[in-house]
Image (tube, rainbow over all chains, first blue to last red):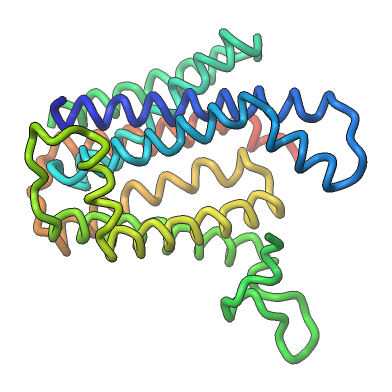
Length: 119
Length: 148
């Protein structure tokens, strides 16, 4: 796999991880628990939290391998593409309202990412 | 882990019994920026120093090889410290106000990569970072205008 592809997959996996974490924590909140220990137990046994953990570790690993062969000034700003992905996924999976101003801002960030990706 | 129990100086209450510095959002935010940027520089320094892993050796061994580099581990730890400071900042100030400020991380990382690693930064990349900064400001403009 080429290093640039690894960076893109890492950024996408981080965004997916955010969605998994949010979904997992929402599920934990909806469960009744007995005190702090009960909450910790509910978090530790929530499948989506585990998926978040795996996605997080995989994203970090791919990031390191990709970054070894790329400039930091090239790879690091690409992380901001995560904002674009998280916004789109929040709309799709959580039906969160994304207003026109926010879409415009997301498009501007996307443009910046495209400029860097081609640099 | 409570942030108050962290053994960093800025987390300790001062002698006058006032709130620790980290309990002020701008201190927590600045600390997070410094740690996040320094953490990434150290990670990159570790990656640059590490030997190239044979291409055919598989992804997992390649990742483990890099995770065994002391500078990479140190950088990841500093980065984690930055994340703790960020959480502390978010706990004290609206996220819509803080989020656009994090775009300074991109500017700092690009500037320091240029200075420390002598990376060649084409104008297009600088324009790209500037556009991202504008996008992040726009993204939170409306919610930031709302009175707290």
